Length: 289
Image (cartoon, rainbow, N blue to C red; front, side, top):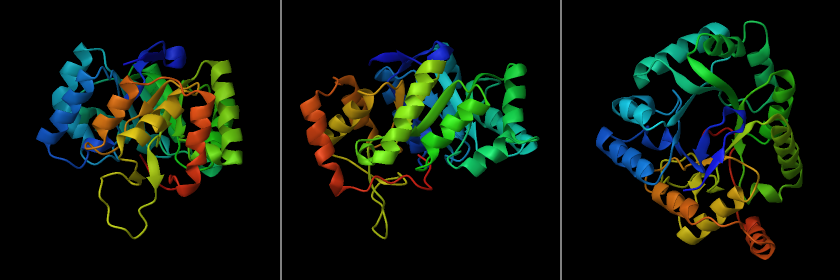
């Protein structure tokens, strides 16, 4: 699997990051199969959060192995004050069975008022800065999940020198003119400041609405291999580092397979893909993975 430099961190991240939300609601045996699968496919970057069910606990038995293999480990906090973020950080370390992270991120900061809370005096950002100073983490990032995320993250980079950003992008969202402009502005600033770029919701298709959920994702994902191939290729054809894998272990192998076969989309193929976007409502407002 292709690797790309995660900005100033210097880490050569696989173009798929293992989004561990997919193992947060399964038993240990199922989680073990998923972890081994992503390692076998060359994934060397894992992303976890306390809000992902039991994902931290499911990774615990693998921690020595992941460290030996040099896997880049990112975690997050949705807390907004210094004290609560610090407490959550230490709980995550205990559940994971480690004393350090590679990346710690402010989680779900999509709205400007959420950024204000985190960057205020006594806000969560202070806990992240102290964690870096004490050696608990090397790098600091920010994530967001709403229409405002790219614009909010651009403001975040003005306020603080974050090392990474994480936000939604897929071919459906790209057809939203304002969202596209916001993403392009953020990507330009990330390139200028050497900031690593994570993408989420690459294969998001539609909100569940009142329909029965057939997968463990917060949105209905694309499931046919051909569409997943094109969706993955679309994202990886942009100037990004890595995309976070889908939060469902049954769709996971299709995303891995698509990434391994990735070739940049030519203009005609991209145009044809974007023409299909009107049939979908790629969801992400208020969702987490």
